[in-house]
Image 1 (cartoon, rainbow, N blue to C red):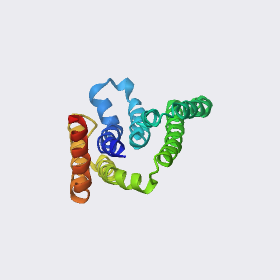
Image 2: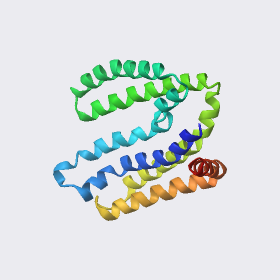
Image 3: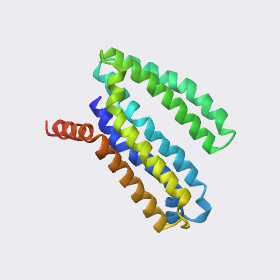
Image 4: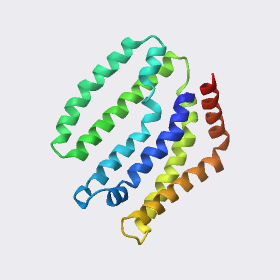
Length: 196
């Protein structure tokens, strides 16, 4: 739970932020021929929503000495994901990436439910631990999305800086204003774990 909490505090703003400013990042870093890459970055950025839940899935199964379950989940995921992505790919790259994201999200959610049950925990505890990062990321998403619609600036370095700055401020403000205790506990746990 603590590892997932720490991952949520770092992965969510990083991935979601990349997705939100992807179009502007492409305008600054790449040639105009690659302007469609911004949409791809947006879908990839949405993966940040599932990383805190599923990133440690195989590690948890190994720690529980249940590598057999890890293998079963992987095979089941591939059996569903491969045809889903193959069918979606007929409609384009964005559809294929979205199908992969959805199947991965469902697989990690199911694996997490099983792991919490095996550990004798409660899903409510995990949800409570992850809520600060998800709520802060939602605030960041709202602010950056609104800023991207309202800023009268052409895509470029200045617009990218404005969007990135507003996102960072929104995330940090929400986290520190409403979830300071949980954020401090997560970082303290990370430093304690690193020192042992």
